[in-house]
Length: 231
Image (cartoon, rainbow, N blue to C red; front, side, top):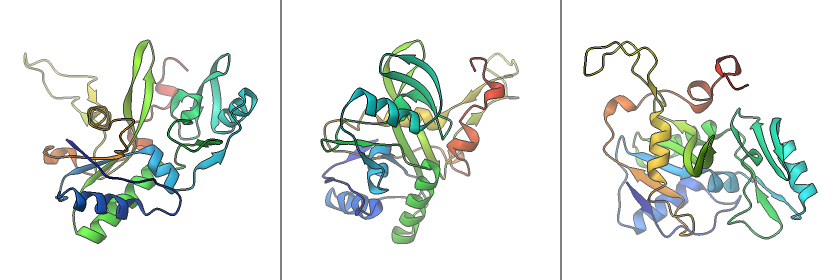
């Protein structure tokens, strides 16, 4: 894994693939078939015009969070744990107030899977490569301290590695093991994407071919309410 450095400011006039390729070329790197390109949701959102005015008041924050939520699960002061319109369960609907201009807030992309598919298709068109794309964002975890990155959009990858029906080292049949490979990629990439270094892109190289294929976060990763013991 390595980050792509030298990326400037991103706004709704930016072509993310052109920005990525320019920084890649300047770094003397190449993109190969079955590389995985990780891109942070913030620059995806900024390039798609998902930056809105925000006056910094608690009332405005709560109103914005609730407008970006399908429902609110928990409230504590100004904090909301919400289900976004995508089906993500996260703090304050994933709205970001860091690394954005004063008086603004950055919302999540409307459809991160679609954003990943578009990025992948543009890379194929411009460089003729077949890659996987992961859109990452930072989430907290229930009952655990600290945050880590997870995938909120994906293209060209099978997000879940289903081990059900296979056997463990002792020959026992695995009945419930489904590995969220896409989130493992996103969490690992966070080790090289420094939050304050202006590095919104990274490349992961060397994944086995069986990780590549069709899939999306919306279809394969977001847990449906009827399968969730906590809703």
